[in-house]
Image 1 (cartoon, rainbow, N blue to C red):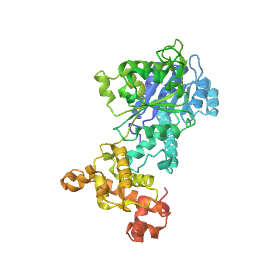
Image 2 (cartoon, helix red, strand yellow):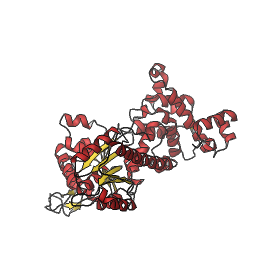
Image 3 (cartoon, helix red, strand yellow):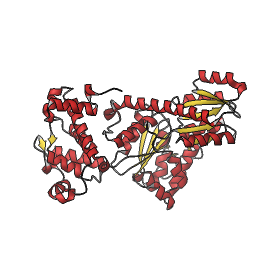
Image 4 (cartoon, rainbow, N blue to C red):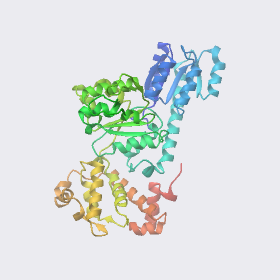
Length: 460
């Protein structure tokens, strides 16, 4: 699996010897890993919760907590993480015991750089293969199972891979992207497609909260805290206990509330308005924003420490204009959603307008456009006249299409998506698929083989 910036292997080194940590960190960084360090088992357990490492290299002899105790807790908390042990010659027997408990391998101290590098490379390969196989299995039903995240473009596939990586972790996630790109859909997919699916999912639109009531909404209040507080009421963080809280438009929170939110994330406890006692909360935090929070913290409108607390893993959602090849697939998805008879389609001219329009409102705008066309259109085939006025204007002014030419890759992905949709619609009937697509059977076979669709898919 490609080790891109978004899906870098997360590597945790646990050793009370700073020089050993430094050597391991140097090798890990050279391999492209995102490196974390811990000097004790207790510190390492905190890193498991906030950093969700993929690979862990730990000494067998740690202060206060033994390496075997840490291994047991690590495998319980992150069962898919690979853990290797570092040990002196006198502790080989304990290293063998560690492997029986689920450790990947052990490295005998003192060690040379090359054996360390080879061990980490093998662990990386296993982690990547497991993640990729999991992604491929889940991708078979991803269009429906992942809560409407639709598309075959490379950028959408990257998003789906990240969802597969994050769904079983407690790692804080920051989702960025323009309005309408589906940030809440992705947050719900991370939660409901993972092991915490049966726990609460609480969505909070930070931009719509009344400033004077934000604290009581998030953290609750006790009876008599303010005028009208006739009884105590739990907040949204308590409602999300053991589950996920999704903080949409996190950049809209006032600075004062940002400080209080940071304290909750650090201490894992909330204090209701008007109360003296704190209550523990166990929540996974997924935040989202359409703003540039890095620029905001640099100009003083967003707390730098809160930004780094939320931005453990960042996931950027592409604008619809940057994934135009997905538009036909999305169009037919929404047609099926809004047209009960499922008989409508768009003329080639109308589809061309949809493909060349820039969609400033992204997927949400496209969905509204299709719903409008279905509601107002009277014919089986929807035409340019059934589109909103702004998109119709694009068709009337051909000069507006200059600079919006689709690339060869876009056209190829559009062709693949169209063939796959028709092929699935006729349940693999090649003769019927060829007739609907207007191509010969020989051409259809060639394209099925080229795009790896149906029985023609080549398994390597």
